Amino acid sequence: MEAIPARARAYVACVALCALALLLPPLLENPTPWRAVVLLAVLYAAGEQVAARWRFGGTFYPVLLAGALLLSPSAAALVAVPGALLSPAGQRPLWTRRIWRAAQLVVAVWAAARVHGELGGRDVVVSGDFPYALIPAGAAVLAFCLVLTVLDGGIRAFAERVPLRRAWRGLFLRSLAPLAVHGLAGLMMAVLWRSPYGPVAALLVLLPMCVSWWVFAQYHRERAAHQATIRALVQAVDIKDGYTRGHSERVGLASMMIARELGMDDDRVEVVRFAGILHDVGKLGVPTRLLRKDGPLTPEERRVIELHPEYGHEMVRGISFLGEARAAVLHHHERLDGSGYPYGLMGSQIPEPARVVAVADAFDAMTSTRSYSRARPVSVALLELERCAGSHFDPRMVTALARAVDHHGWHPAVTADDARTPVSRPPVSSAPGAHR
Image (cartoon, rainbow, N blue to C red; front, side, top):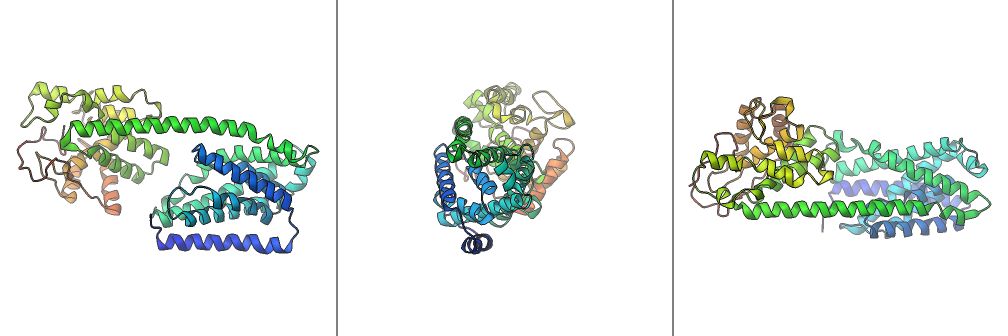
């Protein structure tokens, strides 16, 4: 069972109490169109089940927004409750997560319906007065998006311990475009609902939305297949080069820490993480005898080893969603002073993700025990990176790693097959953190 911090549980409880305060008293005091509420609630619950089955990862917002445009705030908010409470929660504790989701949607839908009503939107929906109906509907979507953003940022700060200055970064803009499309579909549903054709015509709006979601679900399945391929490649590298088992995953973690400290958006952080994970995949093209050789490498053997970034780039260049990660795989052994390989790039010629991975790679190499070297303390490794900043490594990346380690710590792992093996194999280079 995954524990939820006490302050996160308190936050969820506060939002749930707020939702109850918005929901129950108005329902008891005002007449409620229960037929419309029940029908929309059933549609929303069914849509949530379909989204979960397709592993879409989203929610059936058009129905919620249609309810916000058709009903009073409390009645519209009630539409979200059954679907949110019955939807798959994914991780435990299930009911805490379901209650959170229900409370979050109740507050967001209530706010959207209230804004829409204050702007006279329900009268415009009944009359079907376009394009004026777009103004209150657009304001309702903005309110819905803003409330979800505020609440999502809060739970990130309390449950995931994300720093407050980053908890809300990018959430609003990332959510606005999809919610605008859902809002337009919700407006079409509301107008048709109030038309002579009634609710049956309104349901037709959902058909093209379902088709688009199905297509998007296929994309997610393809992406999941790519990620499974990545995991298999990394596992193959770990098996082939037992001296650095687990290194790729840790470089991915350190790269992600640096990217977050630099303020990259979440999508780019993910790309940089993939770059760290895949940076050594080209070792699959290097003879195993060289990777496991005891003793120093000859110049010819070193040149063979130094081909692994190009091998890796060839392996991953067809995986389109990796984006900048492909360039990082190719250039993570370049140095700022131009003495790196494979192309001797200098300074800003080296792609930014490659500069991130270079620092993460050297840091993990220095802080991990291998059969040819003992792990250095984290503080010593950071000092070594700082010493080489400006020549080998980008100073911005080194500073970002130092800040990230200071905030979150670092727990190096033994990667050699046997940590007790005496040191019998010298490093292949004098560069800090050099490894094969």
